[in-house]
Image (cartoon, rainbow, N blue to C red; front, side):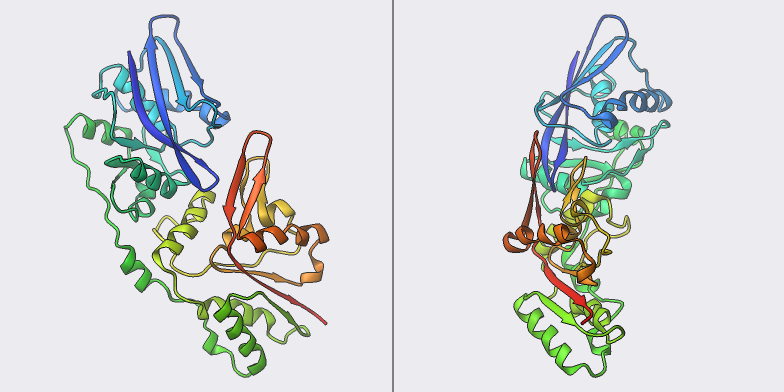
Length: 351
């Protein structure tokens, strides 16, 4: 029998829809996953089998083929565990098999059936809403960040059995609600403040002008003169986040996995201060599995380079395009990714 469950894959900081098609046919027992799965996706068969069995359901002893469509996009991460499990349960008749399901599911399965958090749930919730789905199943720890998306019901779940009970009509799930306007109004306080700086009139005047116009700034002074102290207080005089800026910044931190589980939205301007030994991939992004760099983590905030002459020459040179264009483009043989990098650059050095 054939079943289909909808999920999504994160490309850059955006998410695209992925159809998880599960076909169970007679033959020797096997479990095959196709559609450009990487290692963590291929290993999901062991987690899915144990989760289904330990949740009290029968795992079929037949030939199982899982197709992740579109097949030309590389699938990464562990978020496909839950939709694959739901597809198998739908193909065996345990839950209703819908020809066109209006829900999206994501989550990593533990061997006992618990659902663990995944990265990028905010981008996936935005993709589900834009595709016209009515609700999305997310791990309970990801419920807060996914709930800030309006126009779709966010259903946080803790176990596979909870999802099965809901789809069979035996139990109810409470949709998570969030009020972004309230969060933006209440959680914009900082640990430090610009008003704490005594003296330094010329330096404070320069920071005020830079903050007003979004200018980059270089401070030159002897050690101990207060360069780093002033830099850390620059975000406190920048304009407050609006909702769109908060969503953009939160998506980056969600994809990287740096969003606190108790925080649904980043409401303060980010301040990033990388060490001078950082590599070019760490600063602008990239790597074997591409991920955003420090310049993208400082999007809509401040990127502070302390001890500027200590940074490697080629590392500083790669900053030119992100600062001019407000975005980072990383090209690989198989794909091209774009990360936002609209940031204020602030640097400090000794005479």
